[in-house]
Each structure stands twice: as structure tokens, then as C-alpha cells.
Image (cartoon, rainbow, N blue to C red; front, side):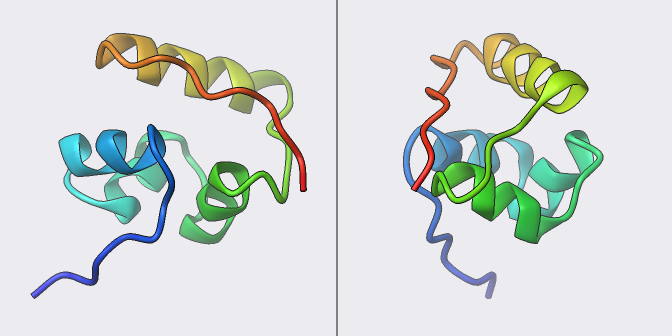
Length: 70
């Protein structure tokens, strides 16, 4: 049984659509740790990472999350 995700929305929905947090991290060419930090606002994606996030959310018809930091 897969672990339940602790990602906030809309990250949780995108991860579910892709098959989990690891699949989301793979799609963004990143680690699951970094994805969790982005999702929880502990780290701010920059440059190519931000563009990849925006494109992936848009491709799945989801609103792009705001860039908030803790």
C-alpha cells in the first residue's frame, strides 16, 4: 500500500494524477524532498524549475500554485 501524501493542494492532486510523489518528482527532474519543500513553501523554485512546474500544472488543467515561502 502506498504511503499517503502530505502535500497540500494543488500539489496533492497533481501527484495523484501522475502516480505519486516520486512520479511528480521524476516529471520535474527533482527529488521528492525538493518537491515537498516547494509544495510546503519552504523553498522557492527558480528559473527552469519554476517553468517546468507551471507547464506541468497547466498540462493537467490545474491552477499553478503561488510562490509562497515559509
